[in-house]
Image 1 (cartoon, rainbow, N blue to C red):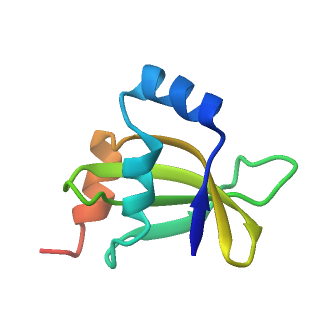
Image 2: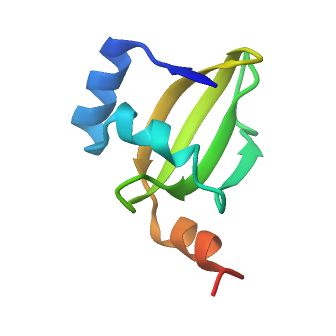
Length: 92
């Protein structure tokens, strides 16, 4: 799977949320990650994944598919309290 992003969007996201898209890409390798379709998406199908990065940070990654084997990251942020609880629920 190839993971891509728009560099200007990545820089703006890092400034706003303090998380790099390169870290977001590692969340997609979390076998315990939770993924669902983004119900708020307009104009294209998007997905939201809640999972741990390669560094162990719990992150939320919003993405879309460009091709079956190409995924484009749209946004990433640190998981909020409720999101953390959802991830940990049933995992202990």
